[in-house]
Length: 572
Image (cartoon, rainbow, N blue to C red; front, side, top):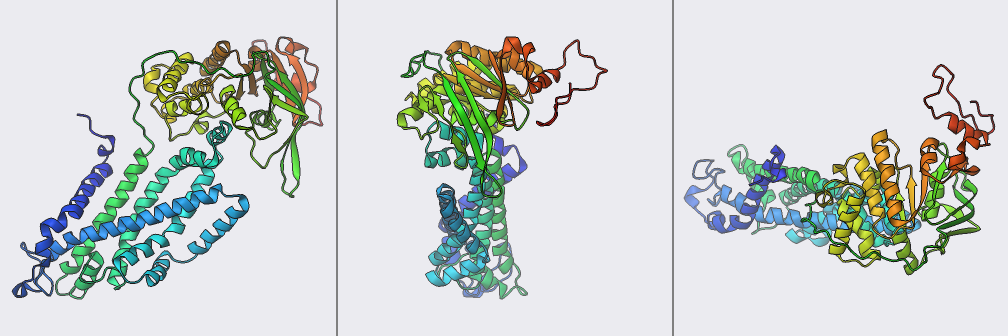
């Protein structure tokens, strides 16, 4: 029998044992010890700790150990209720703050800042006055006082994830803001939320004990650990265990909550692999446009972003490009030349801050400068494939490879889960991922760098791609893995007949893979040349890029070539 992974660590084992004990005390404590906790015995009143009474007895002769065990139910249930109110309310408020327009986002953020400026316990005391000094009132007070904490945490975490490549890709596939938030953003912020929830539960437990100790929480004849601590503190110099007993219970349960948070944070993103998938062919989605339709038509593309002075700064200046079906076009240039911005404009992935203008920007008769309708979004989700530079940040770390691959087919091609799963296995086999039936149930971090890149290529093939945009897919890969990725791209193109827009710094790599080369610098196209005629390049910048690539005949004693600034001559 295989031992669960969370039981293999000391904290996991301790948390499991502690959780079992807390559950047993909560469920069976009042049943087993209820009579002993209420039975009065005047001759045995105010006795000290003994074998018969580990925590002693109170002024009515009731066993304090039994009363501590029975009080577990009230203390734990109130803690869980208040924590649930804080977490649910905070997450909803934080998510709403992310989905709202920027003006309303600032207003909500300001409200959260105002609430956070008050001490948390002070808010709890304020709300307890509103709802009264009862157990339910204390639960509501502590719960509502914790909402701003989780609202700030959720909005901060969600904002950091919302700018990720896989979230932008989900928007490209037609996923709405609400669906993207709960499908891609919330799962990736769960680990820190779980840790903070556990820590907050410990603090909430202490807060309830403090309120009851002050007489603002649970009222007689009910009792919790706080009331027992209050009663025992009056005799602490005569019978210390009368106060230490409830304190031990508070500390132990608080430690269990903290340990649970650590265990959940370590295992919260794991998924069980699906059962073995039977191999079977599935019907490919057929796009409603003919294969002869021009893949991409771009005329005078200009992209501007907000500047520091409040105006717009143009980063891409009048780029024109046409790509025919099955053609492979490469874009090369140094960092900051506008390659990736141009590709993102083609894919419609630039954010709302970007100003994209073009005389004509059409992808298979879809205007990429306009908001696509439902039919066009469906086509874009199936006919465009984007392979980002860093697959580790482009793949959703909280979802398995198979789940991410299936999404486009299920949403846009209306495939069943079984068919899309079989198709995903086929595509992983196509890009030579070994043991695809098992790998499809793994998370991105379980793949090597080259395998993640090939998995992204396979993900793009889940529809019927007509254009594969590869944005520096071989960066930081060794030459062996680089060759595997390039081979997978070529095989994907041969299988689908898709055109490829390949972006790279390496002009030698592009010349050996592409039909045409577009050379960009400072947001402009400085030269366009056939790959097999690269030695005939005329522009000094292109010649400088070529000179930076060494070969077997390169003189190793010569000075390294330098690509100077745009207004200077190229030194070769």
